[in-house]
Length: 449
Image (tube, rainbow, N blue to C red):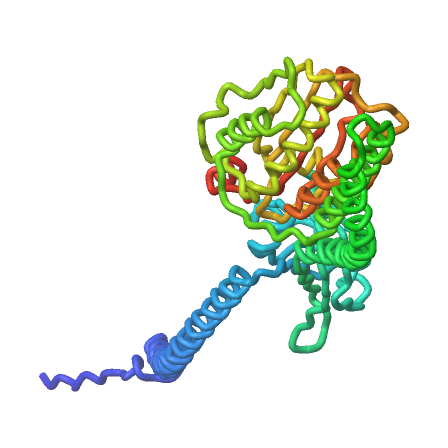
């Protein structure tokens, strides 16, 4: 039986069949995978390139940051080293820079103002236009304008101020800076020079007058002495001649005192313990006073023999002993030789000194006041004498030359200090003397604490 061969149909490869569709899909998938692989490789290469660029950018950024940090540290170093005060503000008027010199002059902690508004921290001063805030607002600069600040502790600070507007690289205003120098010491020196010039002119005049007066006085005294010698002891005219001679001697002494008053006093300062100095001055006064001191008593602090930093003051001992001698003489005369002279002294905290005496003394930033008070229980000073108390040749007692308090005032001024009568004191006379002294490290530490 003959079998027919089997015929197989290749239907799996025919177009439109599921297998053909799968083959097409697979081929398409391969093309997509190949495309993604190429994209991946391209992205990987781009990533490597960008990463390299980023590394380079980071390196440049680190270098720039380091350079900016160095520049900032350098700028901070300059600001810290400057003796002038520097305050900078941004265009909104907020403080961006405030150096140690500004902190010291204005008495403001160095970290307090940063980021705060200028008008809330810095006093306006006079004139009010000479500051960084006005420069930032108006765009106008000022140069070397004299300005006065009244600080919170009562200090009167005189400075020279310059301001300028700060611009960015494009020329746009971004803020302003204010630089100020302390002129307080210079003003004190100007006052001292004026005083010295006045005394020098007065001294020249007094020397000329003394020369013209002393020669005739010497002749009058000589002839008077000869006339007295040749007179009989019982001659009633001898009393008149004696009075003439006494008057000439008094006049001659007045001329000598005037020359002493107008003479320039060269201050030879040295640091002394004031308590021991005072004790010795009292002993010398009681020993050398021409008139009997009677029952005058001296009331001195119990710590008068103890020397400490609070007791130390820089002054000319010889000249200052004359100041005390003149005051003690006045007290003895006022009390009639029977009374009490009280002496107190202390170094004031700077805040107290500026609050009480800023109108009498121009203190430096590193200075405070050594206060000495001499009080007696006499009748006090009459109202008529108050305004002329320290004027030369003004006196309220017979035989006085009126130069004792004037000389005391001159010596105190030569020390950069002051002397005045306490007009509110009613139980006698009270004189208050002030001497500027340097603030010690201990004082500064206590103040900062």
